[in-house]
Image 1 (cartoon, one colour):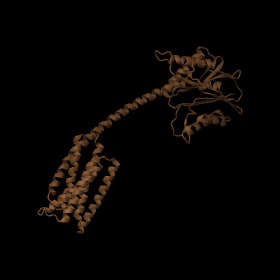
Image 2 (tube, one colour):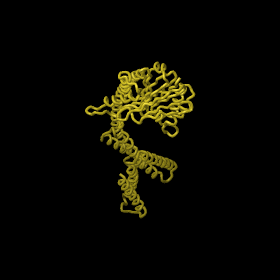
Image 3 (cartoon, rainbow, N blue to C red):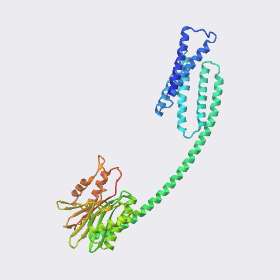
Image 4 (tube, rainbow, N blue to C red):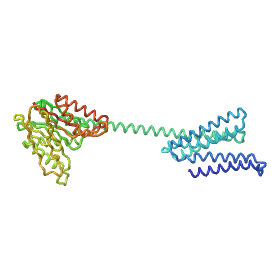
Length: 456
C-alpha cells in the first residue's frame, strides 16, 4: 500500500505542477475548454494527494491511524472554518479553502475512519460487509462532495446528492440487518457462556464440597486435642495448609507404654498430598500398633518399605519417589527419655541458654538412592522446661519480605529463641504473625506445620 501511496502522491504533485505551469505560460491549446481542463487537473491532483494519505497508513497500527484521523480531521475543520469566514467577508481564496477541506476529509480521513470501523468487526464479517463498507464510504463522500459542488456552482451537485443519499440509505438498511445479526450472535454467545459458567460453577461447588469433606476426614485422622493435651500439657501446633487439604500432617498414638508423636511433610500438597498423608498415617499405625514396632528408626524403615511396595507401578518391582520427610518422637515420660528419628527434618531443643539441634538423616521415608541406609535413633534425656520444636519446610521456604526472598531457617530459629520464655500459645501467635507479615500479599507456597512442646 505504501508503494501505491507514493505513486498517488507523485501523480498528484505532477498534476498540480502541470496546472501551475500551464497557468504561468498562459497555455491556450484548450482555449475554449481551458476552465474545465484547469478544474479537472486541479481536482485530480488534489484527489491523488488526499488518497495517498490513507494509502500510506492503511496497514499502520491502530494508535497511529487514530492520530492521522485526528490531525487530518482537525486541519480540514480549521480550513473549512477559514473558508466560511472568507466567503462571508468576500475574501479571495474561499473557493480553494472549501475544495481543500472537503476533498481532503472525503478522501483522507473518511477512508481511514471506515477502515477502522471495519477492522473492529472484520472477524464477524464476510466479503458482503467489505462491500458495504466501501459503499458506505462512497455514499458519504458523494454527499459531502455534492455540498462542495453546490457551493462552487458546479454542475452535477444534485445528481451527486441524490446518488449519495440513495446509496447511504440502502447501505444503512443492510448495515442494520448486519448489526441485528451481530446482536443475535452476541446474545447466543452470551447465553452459551452463561450456561457454561453455571455448569463450571456447579462443578466447582461439587469439587469444593468433596474437598471440604475430605478435609473433615483428614482432620479426624490427625492427632486429636484430647490425646495431645493428655500427654503434652504445654504445647502448640501451628498447622496452616496451603490448600483446603494438606500434605503436611501430625499424628500421635499411645503404645508400648510410650507416646508417639510425628510431624511430617508428605510429597506434594493439596489433594495429592492429602492422599499421601492418609497413606503415611495408615502405615505408621500398622508399624506401631499392628506390627508392634517400638523404635522410631525401625518404624520409619517399615513405612518406607510399605510405601515403595504400595506405590510400585504395575510390572515394576519398585515404587515411585513419593513418601514423606518427618520427625518421629517417642516419649517415655516415666524415665524422662525421648527417642527420635529425623528424616530430612531436624528437631530443635531449647534448654536454658542452649540451642541443641538433632541433625536429620539426609534420606526421605520413601524411595531414594539411599534405600539401603538405615535411619538413626537419637536418645535424649529430657529436662524440665526443655522446649522441643519439630517443623516442616513450608514456613522457612515462604517467599516474601521487602525483597521477595525466602524466610529461611535462620530467621525461624531466631524467632523461636526470642519467644522461648513466652507461653506456648503466645509463641504460636507470634510465629503466625511473623509468617503472615513476611508473606504479605504473595501466595503461600507450601503447607506450614510447626509443633512446639514444653516438658513439664
